[in-house]
Amino acid sequence: MLLILFLFPGLARTESLSAILAPLENHREWHALLHFKPHGINNALRSEVDDDNFFLAENGATDAKSELHATVTAFLTKAEIMDQSAACKFPARYHWIKTKLKEQLELPKYQCKQFESWFAGFDAQSLTLIYPASYLNSPSSMFGHTLIRVNPSNAKQSSSLLAYSINYAANADPDDNELVFSWKGLTGGYPGGLSVLRYYEKVNEYSSIENRDIWEYDLNLTHEEVSQFLRHSWEIKNIRFDYFFFDENCAYRILTMVDAATPRFNIESQFSLFAAPVDTIRLLAKQDIVSSTLYRPSMAKILKSQIKQTSEPLSKIAINLVDVPETAESKVYQELTAIEQAKVLELAYGFIRYTDKKEKIPLKNRTKKSLSLLSKRAKLGIVSPFEAPNTPEVRDDQGHQSSRISVGVTDETSSQYLDLGLRASYHDLLDPSVGYPRGSEIEMADLQLRIDEDGGIKVQEFTLVNITSLSPRTTFFSPISWRVSGGIKRYKNELLDQAIGFLDGGSGVSYPAGEGLIFGLGEGELNADSDIDKGYAVGVGLQLGYLYQGSKAQGLLSYQYRDFFSGGNYRIHNVKAVLALNLSVDAQTRLTLEQTKLDNNRNLTSKIEYAHYF
Image (cartoon, rainbow, N blue to C red; front, side, top):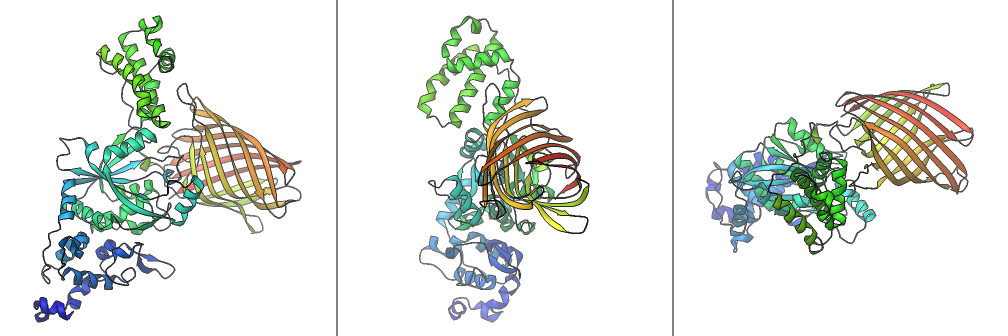
């Protein structure tokens, strides 16, 4: 401090540095720059940054006041190498403090060549939030993803695909399998970090390889707020944050970066336990940060749209062209009109691109066939006969909220119960379907309590995780349908009324049927409980059903069979019919009729319930 007073004697003549900094010590914007947030029962403030290199004070991760004083002291102390100075390392802090204290304190000027070159490369004018939709085949992408595109000042003259994107994600070990990846992602076992890539690289990854639709949300930020966002991005681009799938994830970190860039919002404070990417977008939209939206259909969506616009005979010719290129010389193909040939060639080319990207076939192995199709298509000399896929009437962020609370009345074998439910997230097959992928469900932490006529309360079911993907098969697509779930559920017969642990799953096929789909899955299940003979039971079986997902109602008719043969000896038959009526986007009523036969005991239940999404 004496050195600072010697170098800057003006401080001594007016007011001390401590007095100058006092109004900023607990400023929300300062806390946002440090990523401070309340933790624990006593809501003690500490930083979410898990890297000592981010702090200049020894206790900077837990004491914002100490970090402020250490930061300003560092700014007032000239470094021998300019680019290694605190001001060049923390340009967002420097800019904010200089702006706030412009009347009380004159900070030295710094020339930060490395930062200035990096910053100038963006030529930043505005920001766009990018949302690739959910992708069930990757644990880290089941709830979708968000990243930021930095739009240059000449965005109207150049393609947005050439702009840079700022992405935050877990730096996972590529050798980790899906189980290890999921465990580390849930427990913070991976560091999270920023990466800067051209936007077209991310579009290719999400839209072409993973076949995920992309929504773009232009953010209503000023040029100065955009600049501060980039300054803060520089500060944390090499800094470690522990990555958690459910809270400190891609979407949450992007929100904290927006909060650090502008005092107008305090978005991250509204997320504590769970931050699904689509929920963060809903919040941004409510606070009028989103000015416009754009939809980019995935390669799969484009191909499916083209298939719908093509007759079945032409689709079969396109498939033949993929398998046997000589089909183009056949009489059947030659007799087609120019428009029909264009459809067949474009459809065949699109299918090759889709399958090769999905199966990661090397470019050199697919070039010859693709070039042949493109050459024939170019010789026709006509515009594409296909219309682009329609933009969905309802965006993903306009669907129901992720959390759900429910209350219902159940009649079961002359007894009545009051059922209470609470689900942390996200979506099941019978929730209002608009804005969510059809035939898919992801549920986490779904608790169902039952209160009997005497006031006794029991856990009827607790589903820790429930994931289903019923992807229908068509002429061009042959995906595998699958499901997995685990938790606690209650079985009941003459001798048993016990909630036992379970883990089950299966795979099979689904086919479109009118406005819904039919499905069949071969399944297996593991039960564990001390009341079972050996403490566990392993069973196999199947599930057959019809699922309807409309805009105003959903329905399910299913039959499930289990034969437990190892560790336990019992059989279960279950027939269920459910009708769900959507009262609004965030309200629904359901009627369920269900019969369960456990060995020789039959249990018939009917239930009516109301669900609210929040």
